Image (cartoon, rainbow, N blue to C red; front, side, top):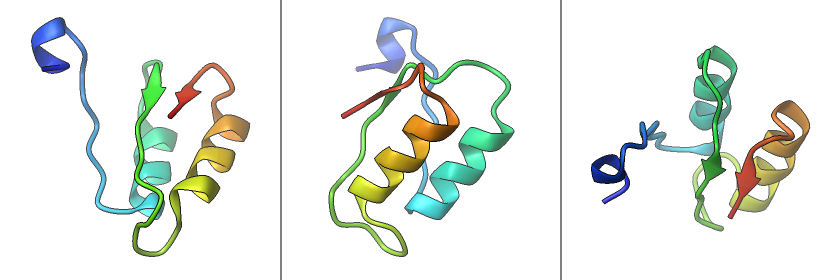
Length: 60
C-alpha cells in the first residue's frame, strides 16, 4: 500500500539491521514503523536511537 502511494520502503529483520540501513541510506526517512518486541533490540530503543540519528524521522 505504501509503495503504491509512492513511498520507498526499507525493510529490516531487527533493530540492529534497521539502524545499519538508516546509517547507509542517503535519502530522508520520513517514518519508522516498528514493532515493540523484536530480536536484539526492542522497538522503544530503536525509536530512541532513530530519533537521535535522524531527528526529522517520525517514529510510530
